Image (cartoon, rainbow, N blue to C red; front, side, top):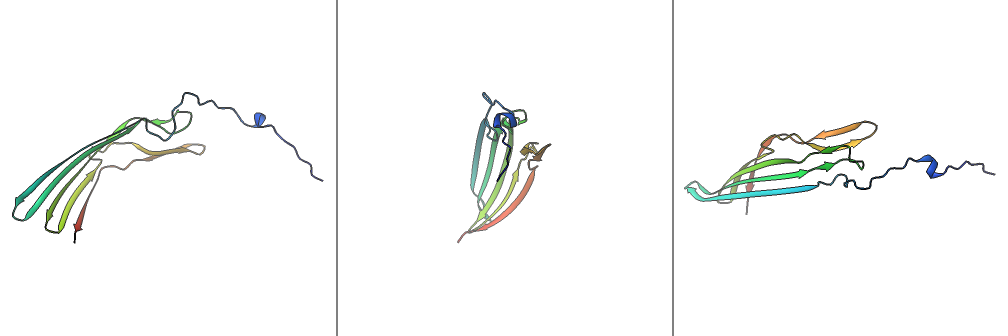
Length: 130
């Protein structure tokens, strides 16, 4: 013998209408542009210098289905300078040079929580080609 109570889904759940809203977590627009400039044999100690710059942008990003919380369009400028001599390449790179403040991710569990995007960063690398 089993006794049970049933609820109608219409009684238990509120009804939300998202008609006309934008898809969450998908940027409305994306943009990217870049340029490279190579200097061959600038001196006897370096075979090649490569200067690179690029700009990437994304936005507006709606974080929830109701489109209440969003990130406006933002862009980041990145750059890299590398020098090659024979089989070795030395590089210095920088990301988010303009130190743009943006939200990398947002979600709600009772209260909204946003993760800030990466600030200006700089780094280097050494590559050896055989």
